[in-house]
Image (cartoon, rainbow, N blue to C red; front, side):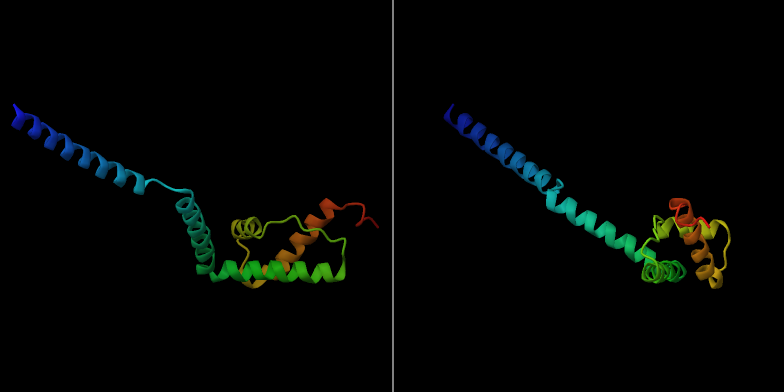
Length: 123
């Protein structure tokens, strides 16, 4: 009887160790706030890397930035509510060739500004 009791204790001890091991494994695989933040940071970096993989889009974004700087130096009332990403997609939809981006972007920014500030652009 005593040997059965000891044997049962050993089995219980082994079961407990297996359960603890499984629990520990599960706990380490769960996403902690730090892991979630690392994943988000990696996702943002991957998106930026993807954007940089397309030199045409990067050129487009730089042209948008250059025009925004230029117009803000000239006119403080010039307002920009345009997302470079959305503008790029519109240019691609309209099949604007890359060598015409600068002029096209400038026209789009002017149109957008006129819509946002019609009073300033009345003659």
